[in-house]
Image 1 (cartoon, rainbow, N blue to C red):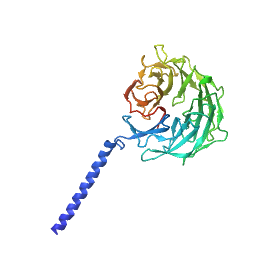
Image 2: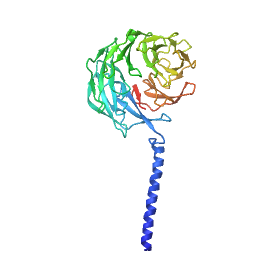
Image 3: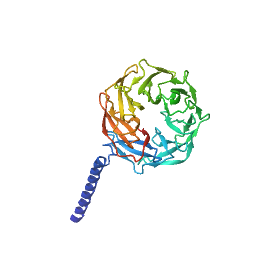
Image 4: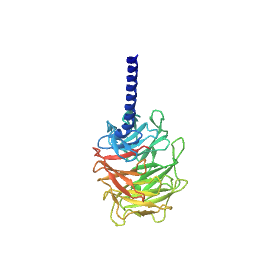
Length: 376
């Protein structure tokens, strides 16, 4: 009896010890891997033109530290120019300029790895920019060389694209960028050669385009990029040759009206900055203009009328060379800048006064970045 009781107690001790070890491991694991509840993360995708692929990252919610997902970069078509992820987080789309098509990549829900689903879908000539409505119903592609817009219905189960009837739709000459408005009611297309933004109303549920009355709308000289605030009150357009930002009020019909005082200079020094991209804070209170000339960022506060005020006389450095895109993280405390000259991503924190502070530059991407998309 004594030996039996001793054996039972020994087994109970071993069981308790094993459970304790598992509990310790489960508590310690998030701190080690950075993927558990102690340090949650979200996904980010960077299109690499020279590598013909997309690099996937897990981005730490609190520190914005980048962790490259094993297998990156994942192959796409030739010369990827724009990347966009579906709100379901199951699919990623990439516009391939080198072969005039779009790659569909499915996402592994456990690892975040990407795998391409063939065949690719044809676009117009030289697709330059992708956009999607917030519900993930339609994908839009601006085709620079064929001067039109391809529109695709998205299968919610498989992610497969089907071009809608009437697509592609003609637009202004050589469109380089498009955006769906936050409400999903309008599509805006930037055509630098015509110094114009074309505006279209999107037929809900069908994806068809109807020109907005008064479109196209004349903007500044050599427009290079644009963005829209989340409340859909204003559009901000960067003008490369004049180093300015034009601001337009967006009317309920989708028409654009330039506000008094626009355009606004990107620096008080009167020097050329050559702005190439722009992003607005999720709160709509601040605007950040990426300047390719001096490799820096101009920071503005946005007034109630849309008027811009420089926060500092000296723009903040971009921590890289040849910057081409700027965007907010899903955590509005951070901003990312893609640098084609130095093949990296610069990370900035947003101070309480709206100014930016450089905090890190992850290791080299190995190829020049052309576009980035961050999921919540």
